[in-house]
Length: 276
Image 1 (spheres, rainbow, N blue to C red):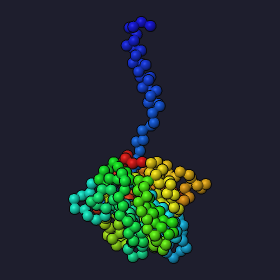
Image 2: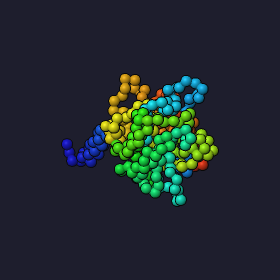
Image 3: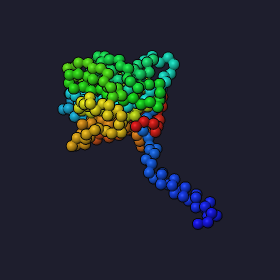
Image 4: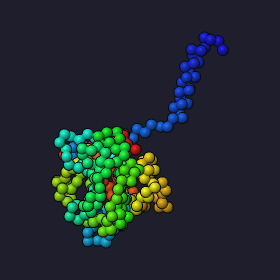
């Protein structure tokens, strides 16, 4: 081959090499991964249990009857000046009938506070957590086995509380990103979350302690070992990884029908690519 052909052939070789390398790389995920709640936006999950009917085990009311696990992945943000209340990650129930609540504790940027039946389980600092960093996602798991409440953060055991009474939430709806001031009155909410909610999972079983580190390090894996019936152990799965068709409804991917609804409240919300 004569040298005068090199300038033509060389770009073709380079182009072919680049195309080959591109084909070998993992595809870039451009999809939505989480929802950011700002200045009063929140998510509500209706407890569909009819108080005068037998227990419907597909509803949130089944949390009153036995074991469960709550799994959350979220990121915070710098709080507005003057905020001293506890921003809410998740809560259900109220101070009259019983309550499960997970809250950020300002001004500490790594701490959460967990309540069970309105009793304080503990105030815990999570290794690797920084609620002031909107790009750093933290995993929290709360389990209850009928006797003990256990709390984990980023794969680490944080603490526990003995409570053999069981959770008593009545027929309360659940909230992500806000707290009931008056039970089930959306006109009277407070303790709003500032930051992203990546994924919330509610299980009707206790997640094993030896899975916590795996779950933290592999956020896209729903579970290490699927049951024979797939997602049956899940009571609710809210991924926030697709923008709702109607702008508000977040489908429950567990198949139990516990869809969530996002409300702007006094603030706003938007979907972002950051998250798992």
